[in-house]
Length: 475
Image 1 (cartoon, rainbow, N blue to C red):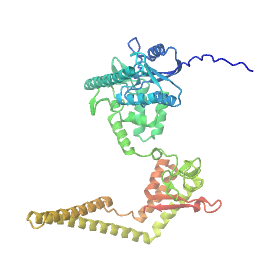
Image 2: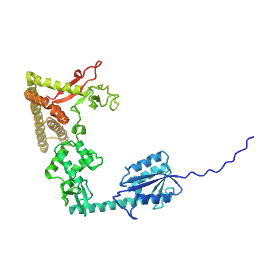
Image 3: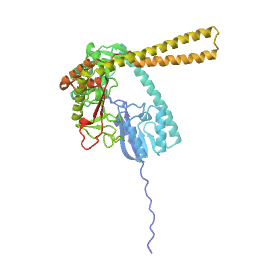
Image 4: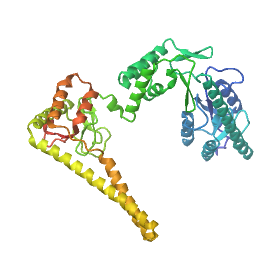
């Protein structure tokens, strides 16, 4: 008979703790009164003694006013995976300075079985007293954050009134509490404004600034710099732009050209601002999906097995050069047809007459509605019409007036279609200048005369691109 084994005591597993560090701005600060990452980590390790440290998660140069932080997201993932039992912070203000979001996050952590430990306030959320104290501490942290923000707003406003810019924009350095141009980045920012003002693509401007700075930059950040009045020697206080005491890096003429270009290109897709091929945004499949470039071929953006794996049958993978050559051939053929086609001239005159007729009819309808409203108001004022009838009739006339006004605004002024001979001359100019034009210039010129370029899928094996391209012209 086998001997019965006795059960030995198993020591408890130590709790798994994550140390969370947050600093709003390092900015080279130090000293005992500064809660540096090292100071926070040392204090948290004292309060978490005896627990197993899983990780130290840092959010450096991040505000506590919101929870869109990489460190918080990492803590969420670890809590969901049941990888931690406790979260240690130096004080509750490190976790966040927003009571609502902080309490929501803490409640979620509690549901995952994670306890909060504070090294400064001796808060332990595993007890009711600790949870009550934590709520009060978060409210105090939010109050202090609001007071700090209000104090900084006043400080920034007072500096702006004296012509002093708050912060250090790229291209400047602080010297004796004043902004002075950086010896390297100052001239670089001047060159950035000059290049953008003369029409250089924003992508190339961004690459230039990245190379000079030695750090990668993104187009939206460069555009934000180009909009800043600080480079014109100004300071901003709220919505007011005031004269500054620092030296400008750009002159008024260049600044105005840059702002005009930024306004003109606002909302335009980057592929149209700096295209890498001539037909970008113009060529599409029969289902209306824009074609995209892959190497030397075109694919449907929503085609099955292509870019995004959509439900469109697609167009296969036609060669871009052959599609472009067919487009130019059809454009040249259309120009020759315009010169000899008397029907085109007749159609032009017919469209012009129809447009003028439609506008005249709408103007008459608008006039009738307004004169009818005047007669109704007069009849009602003289007591010749009941109020209910007046209101109903007036509502119908107002609706007729609104519809006519909207339609008139839509069609605008009647402009005659271009003369066929003049249109043919524009096509000849385009074909002659085509080899010397940039991709952006080619696309703009094509879109002025071609409404759509449709590429159909091959109907038979190796059907040439020249038989699969259809053009729809504006004229």
